[in-house]
Image 1 (tube, rainbow, N blue to C red):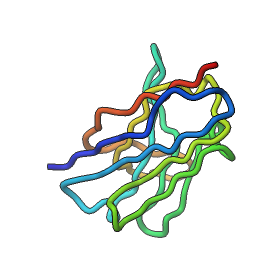
Image 2: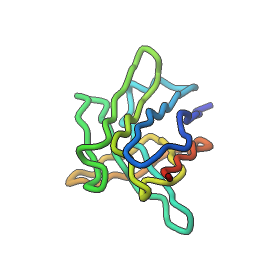
Image 3: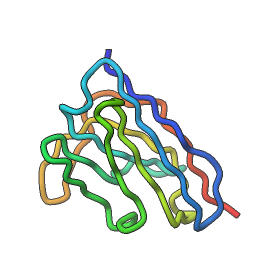
Image 4: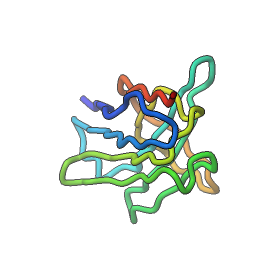
Length: 123
């Protein structure tokens, strides 16, 4: 059974950092492109970043570019999202999922979601 478990969220002050983890079970994560998504209260779930399976290339939404870094450790079947210089507008529940990369910065989640991890940026 394919399953994701997100962790690493918490309460952090503006300008702080967090590292989120996305641990996969039931499949070999290295064979898939993996994306991070977030959903703020009252808003739709939106893409944040993805990392491809073929060459490890990455993509970031403009809102997080230069502040967030996505990486993968295939030996641990885990994808990470390092978040620096956090802003209050980064507050959301963060999810990971396998993604289909359509190109041109367009990508879609595919498969199941984990429970997510809450990130709250507040002073």
